[in-house]
Amino acid sequence: MGGMERIGKMISRVYISHSRKDEALAQALSRSLWRVGLESYVALYSLSTAISRSERCAFGLRNSECLVPLLTSDGCRSPDVCQEIGLARGLDLLILPMLAEGEQLPFLVEHLKPLIFREERFADAVGLLIKTIRDLSRLEWLKVTCPKCGEEMTQYLTPQEEVEAALEKGSCLETVCSYCQNRINLDARTFEPMP
Image 1 (tube, rainbow, N blue to C red):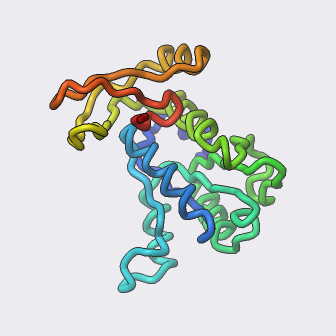
Image 2 (cartoon, rainbow, N blue to C red):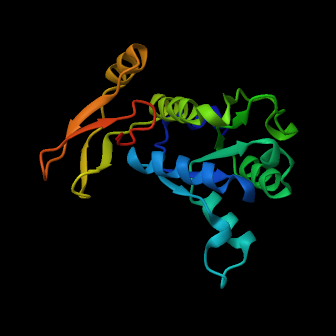
């Protein structure tokens, strides 16, 4: 079953492949995916020392429906990232590469259309990734942590049409904290609460 034949399958877990130097980008992506209800395997370098890195990688990929490799200049040259891409291909996972502007895709995924990003505009690519996953699967819930009271709440995810309208206007999304009634502005790309 090829990656495109898997469209009918729900995406609930994403494996983020990244180089050690791209840990901050991977964490930012993981937080954005968490906000829209997706579990991600990331930061595998800092997990339990009782399990080998190769076993953590195999476990994360086997339990995911999608691989998102972060292909910065370091990511494209990373043997770990390239091996994770190879394992994902062998497991027939959907692969949605995020490619830094000016870089070239590794040969195992050079046939795929990447989500191009510049590091200073990474949130734009994250928004496009979330939209792509929404097009392929069903995302229903939004998790928001109120910047005022710190409470975490779960709400229905803003319809994609409203997200696109906000992006077109250059505005944010709005919600209200169900605990303290504080108005919260959300980045329409990443759903991150804004100051």
